[in-house]
Length: 331
Image (cartoon, rainbow, N blue to C red; front, side):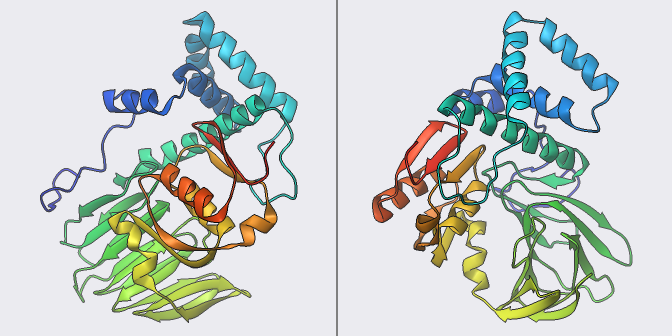
């Protein structure tokens, strides 16, 4: 964020993501094996269609640097080939097949694949946030932006337009009025045009990708166009953009590190908690997933949220590894 003003206390979200001491400390605290994580990342990377010869050369150098690297890669690669695909994240009637170690390895490989995709977006981004963090920044025109977990944006300001590209995740914007330069945010197949307002946009396929807390915005996309005012959200359904009343302040409480739910199905709550942690939360009980949740949780402590859910709903929580949590029926 060099050259951009920001209030005291705001952090630079454009920091380096590789090789930092802080990242190594986080890995140690989480209990992850860095060799296994690297092996899973290589399996995911080399399995992708855009793997290059340079990637393969770097991989061979990594594998040959330590016998432990080769052993970890062989184990992850064997699991990948034997199982053929990542587990289906949708609710299932019964528990997933496989041993706890197999499930943990699948979660590790899946997490590594998601990390690789997210890393590409971060390399393109001007501002980004890590998984489980919420970042705040001030743009060159004085507008504020809040980045929810695992979010990346590009910023392109000209004399005629202020343009933001939401590459991934969710962001909330507090726009400084400037009639001569409309503020336009694009992401998730939608374009949101505002002059002076506060609104959010999600680019992850959410059912309600746009909401307005103050002012009014013009939303357009392949499914049509809609004008959205304060206290309203856009829902994508039936081939059109539908404008509905909503509690936008509650839906953007994540800006203050809070996740607030009122009568939301547990399956949907767990899907949201998944956004704020590495790895996967797998729901094994469809009936449990349909039960309603009302409460407030700390977005920075999803383990505590899971403990509260277990205590209040009588749900069984089993942590197979830092990257895999099972909710519902025991294995």
